[in-house]
Amino acid sequence: MEVIVYSSTGCPKCLEVKEQLEQWGISYEERNVSENAAYFKELQERRIFGTPATFIDGRPVLGFQPKRLQDRLGLSDDQIEAAKKSDPQQQQESSSESSSTADSLFETIDSDLLGKEYDFVIIGAGPAGSTAALYASRARLNTLLIDRSPQTGTLAITHKIANYPGVLGELTGLELVERMQKQAKSFGTTLVQSQVLSVNFTDEQKEIKLPEGVVKAKAVFIAVGARAAGRKLPGEEEYTGRGVSYCSTCDAAFYEGREVVVIGDDEEAVQEAGALAKFSKQVHLLVPSGKLRGGASLEEVEQLSNIKVYPRYRIKEIIGDDHVSGVKVTTAERTEEKWDVDGVFLYLSGMKPGTDFLGEQVKRDTEGYVSVNETLETSVPGVYAGGDARKTQVKQAVLAAADGCVAALEAEKFIHGRKTVRPQYS
Image (cartoon, rainbow, N blue to C red; front, side, top):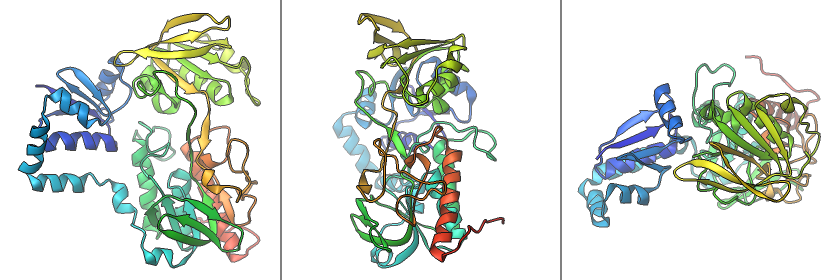
């Protein structure tokens, strides 16, 4: 039996697939698409647009799906149990190794952590939060960084980053964000993994409620990020990573010379269509409402020969086999058409910030984005917000990191009662 695992550097699910196969005693060939462009091309030619992808005698299993792997390998439940019992040492090592870098970076919350007031508490360990932690700790603020799931933020699940300033070559989003977290910890930040249930900013001393108890702070930075939201289209979930995507920055390279659909009625959809046009042979931009919301304009994309705009067109269903092969579209005249395409980029509901836990404690807009001034301060003095928690025209890791820097310097000024920020030059 031939087993080939297509992986990428820094991919936690890839690690889980490999460890599962090793625990079952299955030999496999690994092909790392981050290190070898030929392997990246192989996946692209198979119309698979994400890792891990495990091929068992030529048939793919995408993502980490133990039950499907077991079925494709022809392993019975008795064989699985026997494999677990045959080498308890291997099982223990596998369990230990599967603990990611995040597990060693992020501490368990105990009474000592809950029993003190921090200068600065940061909610969210993505590029905004991690950068804020770095700057705050260097400013000698007693800093706590909280994240409920450090490896699943928008940056962490990005397949490839090649445009972060100062970082030559390519790396995964997870690798980049872990570097930021390590750097923050090296300067003294305490990192913990927990979920923020609610906050209380009514007093001078801010309170952040966790399942384990309450954390207190003099200043707070909200850097929770945002994720795609909204009702799923038929076929969307099934083909995510196999032709369905939400980010051209992450996945455009997979669609070089191919035909894609972009659907949305805001500036983000237009910008993504323009970005994809640099790679794809043809981009079909569907605008379901017939007109763009906000200040978005089609002027730039209409000048590109490989973009065609379809007002009042909607996707009825995403179809395919092992990957996206087409879409069923409802036209402006309410007729149905089937288009053969290789990829679908969805911006139907935009990005929804994960700010529900804030309640009415700070001012937010109708979409949930936190309202801030030019120094990123919210409606509450000493409480800041940045990254994808606030509304920006462009969502990029470097912009989120810049927000983290501004918030930390402003928080340091607030805590010490200074009139101006104190820059860090060394």
